[in-house]
Image (cartoon, rainbow, N blue to C red; front, side):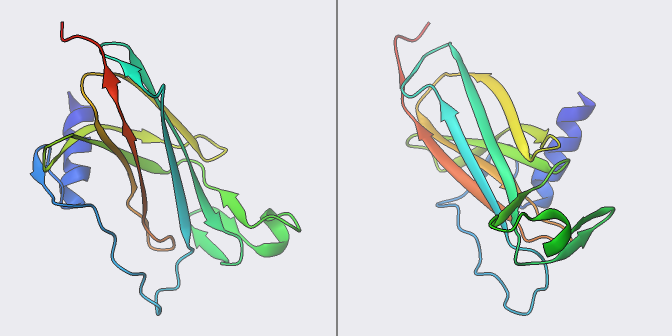
Length: 161
């Protein structure tokens, strides 16, 4: 209960409520004067297509661009310390990702869960498939990291139970 309440408050801070209306998710253009690291968020929801009532695996990864040195709490990414010579992105661990779902034909994003990235920047969640629609993952950003989001549409097949 407390986890859902805290996550709902996090979603509210994003300007999203459990049944908020939004025509289309759009991120603002990055502020050129902002000195935070550029982040990238990937999202993959499987299987596609999914059978109604069966589990969906929600997987993703959060990374920061190696060209951007940043410090976030006790986490530091500096060119020489963390990024390999040919690596362009460094994975971010311990960051909070908010998961939302928008059923086809609806203009409302529904809160699903809040998860954290593991030490390698990956996150995972498992939820039952009920209807076709768009899944959305949001990283809110921080003082030293830009926000990022990703979406994935999944078709759900099979009878209603």
